[in-house]
Image 1 (tube, rainbow, N blue to C red):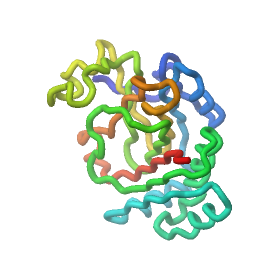
Image 2: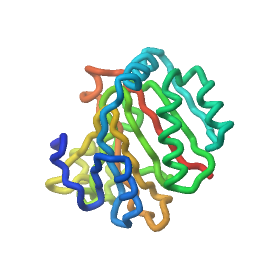
Image 3: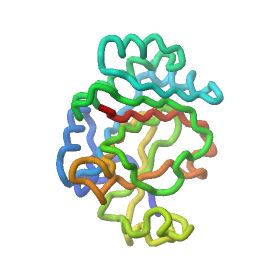
Image 4: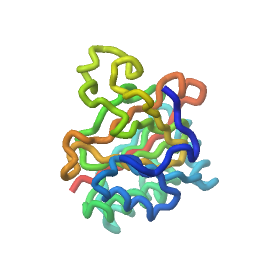
Length: 219
């Protein structure tokens, strides 16, 4: 399937592509399943990300209260290096969007696709940003035959299973972009979770490993 690039994707249907953080509020449109914020990493964040991804086996997972104590804990976590400000910014944003007081933050080096098949998440909403390497791929809901998700595909590839409707476009986030995806547990979104996957091996082999951050509101 073709990959959409740059500004070729229009901001309509179930996907909203925005160029400013304020546009993330589009998430609350009932028809929206994916909000894709295009952005360029600052030189400092890019350098810190490259330093972190050089660490084999890097995996940071933290339950972080959105309090001054939680901020201090994240700042003091040597495993996240100089990315604590970056992680905290998006953690606070998730708190503001959802009203949660605690988030789960994961920052990991990935040497192979973690979720190579298109799928949906059993969460309310998840934020994903890839700081090094190609980003998450997703497909607009109107381009998907959900009856062919998961085991229903019978082992056939995403491209041949019938999951992708004729004319479907697979979109891929770039390094630095932020993608928010509604899951099956978002209020009123059962059966409509954002359909997404890790970039396939052929997209990552030349630039692996990747550094991927996910943030989930917890409570």
